[in-house]
Image 1 (tube, helix red, strand yellow):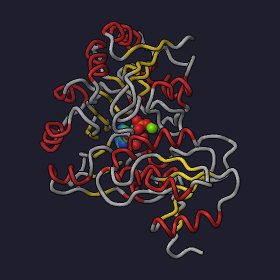
Image 2: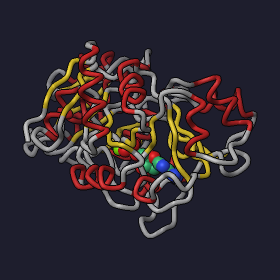
Image 3: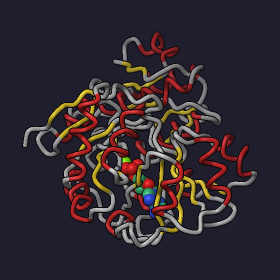
Length: 344
Ligand code: AMP
Ligand code: MG
């Protein structure tokens, strides 16, 4: 199969992409979070292809993307008032809500669950495609399972050229990390995955929020988890990643002490001069964490090479979008963190 590259700024692309979806094919779509690998979310066979192409475990559910808030009522029932308040505040945007699923949503899409994740993405072309297709688009991140997510059309082609019918090129994803996921089937709501909508923003609307343990710690793959995606290894480049926590100076001392030829340093732009002899790669500015979220997956993909020995990574602290960056980087490091303030 030849994968077509469709411009995200051209009306004809909308028609072509919508036709592929209506015919049961796969199209990678741009969104503000990451690129998604899309199929008609109501078509079991089309959805099955997503799992094949990505190599995704069958119990890992897909998010249904809709073009307009009222459409959530077609796919979810018993929608609480909080969901409408969150949609009003944050849609279109990087927020997925877990709601009770209507029977019209196939079990393949929900990973066998009776709940469904729904999101209205902040991408005009993608919402135009969903409207033109007339169906919700089930789309996980468009990376090969386990690998860092795709934030450009080039990343998608790297992973799936020749395996999907088209990719719509809408430029670099603005947020650069997957959506925030909130489970609204329980009260108080539960944060299953941090993302571009921050815990502080959610609390502002909801008043209370439980943070699921999968957000902050490594979880046992045998355990029954609320967010199945969180139990799988994620975002990891081929080389082992270790996060070096602590002050700039202490971290640099530690890294210089242990650095071997072939290792890499993943750091903040402000730190580049400290690592001039350690082949550093900056993923954004520590004083502007949105640049770190936008740049993290580009960097992790660049580091996904067999000839790299070990990656020493610097991770931002604090809340806001930095909270989501910490979550992804810690998962990429399989929670291997060294505190340079106390380590020798
Ligand atoms: P991805 O689109 O690749 O970022 O993955 C979507 C993630 O959303 C899954 O891995 C799950 O963790 C989460 N998710 C989607 N639907 C549900 C659901 N019904 N219940 C719980 N988590 C869900
Ligand atoms: Mg993913």
